[in-house]
Image (tube, rainbow, N blue to C red):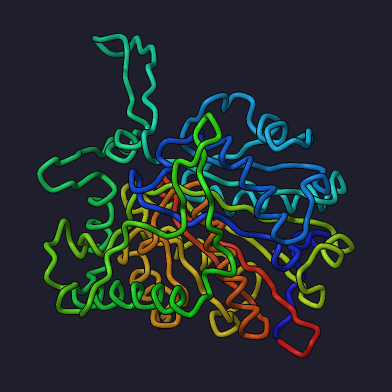
Amino acid sequence: MKEVSPCYPKAFIPYGTWGGSWFPAWHTSALAEVDIARFAADAMPYILGKRNIQISQLDYLVSGSTIPWLYKFWTSPYLSHSFGHRIPGFHIEQACATGLQAVMKAAAQVQCGSHKVVGVLTFDKTSNSPAGVFPNQGTYRRTEVISDIWDNFGYDPSSGQSGFNQATGETSMIACAGRAARKYKLDLNEVLELAFLRYQQYFEAKDSGFLDKILFTMKILDVRGQPLGIVDDDKGIRRYGSLDQFKGERELDTCVTAGGQTHASDGVFTLLVTDEGKARELSQQPEISIQLIASAEYRTEAGFMPDSPAFAVKQLLEQTGLTMKDISTVYNHNPFAVNDVIFAKMLDYDWHEMNNTGCPMVYGHPQGPTLTRVIVEALEWTVKLGGGYALIFGCAAGDVGIAAIFKVTDSRGGK
């Protein structure tokens, strides 16, 4: 494996100190009814407890979400108070890039010596999302009411691109994917074949038990402490029996069909970033070392968000001196199948080799924890391969692409 110095050499991710809920589609589970922040605060010590880690071992918390929740003003200090261990921390938000950004910021905390065991807690609930009322003297109504999910998905204030078609369900996001597909002259059949493969990859990982290593069944209680339901599946996923069935869906925009795009969902994911000594102490397998090597961000032209991750990856490879041939694992946070095909064209990469255990296009998109789950799946897959470089990337609102490379080393004789 070609050697590249990590950007935060003092920061490590202890293997196995991670996990999360399944991602049920919005309004399909009891998660739709809960205070998602309190649920996340309860879930973190539960998950870490399954890894034999006490919540009291954390000395800092980086939280991340994108949808307003009750008492969000208080952010991480409120969350840590809620799980019973009052530690400092802060909150981060960057649409779908939130999970990766939170991990990067946690690594920076360890690198500068401020803290030794930093928890990353990411979550979002798209179900029953709030509406906000904003004074706005620039409009004749002098007040704007924003439905946080649909209005932000339907309108890009930077480009002015908007639109929600109730008949087709098309939003400005779908139009963005179609626009990018036309720019790169994508072939619909190739996009559909890729999307169908992503479903196969997901169900193979699920049926093999791979996902059970990182996803936990969680009981949901109401305010009285009575059972409200159980979250034990990525509910809302269609299971296509054949490619022909998949191809039978109507095009919503160029190369975009219902099965080739993600769906809104709810969920939580957590992991730890520590110094080297604590990583060995807390790791499920101390012989495995995981470090963040480098990261990059790129903003593409307005309205072409699906190509921004590929540009970010190109920038990242250039700054590290690595090539795609040096990468063992490739995982994309892909709200659309279009994203993967564009990446494959721009990087001259075989899209069959990506997202080996599924992807957000299939299992859903709660935004805040989405890339955290992608990171964990990619790292687990890289460990299964015996080590190597894991490339993780995705897009975010504002036509931004984000990418990072993690190095997994197994002293038992892996890469």
